[in-house]
Length: 456
Image 1 (spheres, one colour):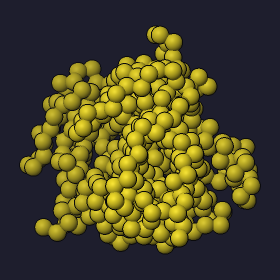
Image 2 (cartoon, rainbow, N blue to C red):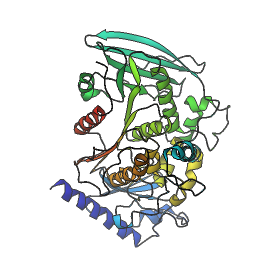
Image 3 (cartoon, one colour):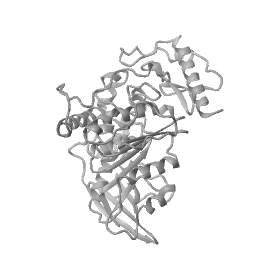
Image 4 (cartoon, rainbow, N blue to C red):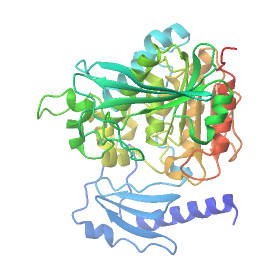
């Protein structure tokens, strides 16, 4: 079976299941009043028997029907089933990225930079990801290790957060601290040993692409956010890590202050503080990349911190690179009920009321302008909504053009593995799932070649 045919069958099966379920229950549509939660979850369990090839299970307060590439969820609190029907996917008009809050049109770069961009940032900081409180601790940096290994130099740098002693490094092979103890920021860098001055840097690079990066005269590295704030769906996690450091014992987090994603983003910006002091790094040429929820995090970071020169968020999906108003796969409801600690407390009010969201993904991408951004999705990662990612990238284009840059260059979704890389916004939907492919890494590095240059 070919990949396109398999994809069509998945969509047909998903839509058929949703239609069958709709015969027995009210299907919630965003922008309408939320139906009351069912009085008895057994009513939900008895709605249907899944078709052959699908499984059904209950997990906490939702139900899942599907396979790893295309899942159906029904939230008990809203009655909304995951949608895979394009004819009903667009649920509301997008907020106009170039219209000021007072209704006036943005027609020049100065108005964008001085008025509209700060308006959008304020919305994201108060309503979506949370603002960094004034009580956020300072970070003190120290280089704990420097080694020359033939053609490369490796460095380990530790950021002490506040006055709390730095915990020991994680054991080799472990996944790092759980951020229950003292938070800390750790940076690892690999740089060419023969460089003349500071080098361009890819944070999040390495692995199979390490040599391709070094061959360009660039360096690579990573910022370990695992010990800054724990990646947990438990609201109690907000009493730990760097967020907990800003709260008095027992004090709840204010509803407009940072969640986990913003805390990670804060750590990335503090890492840039260090990089600006390192003569072996060209801090004007630092790209950041991350996958899935870390793709959301690097996009947030680049949007809010213009010191990062380029961003490569892969399969970042809902509340990252895909439009929330494109009802496909994962939704705001899913985010609120699975990942509430990752967002500001104010964000929860948009569950079931998506059209009141004052922003959408095209605006987050537009905040990166005029710097380059490369967005990816996967054909069998429909949960992350690759078409919604493309639509967001296209809708960010007017801001790039306003600032004298090139937009995506297309208004129709391209075929899989037909990358759009000629503009300052780039997009690719690979054949495959929730991953970044080796081909995409090569595409990104060639894309970055247009902007990054090592000193000769």
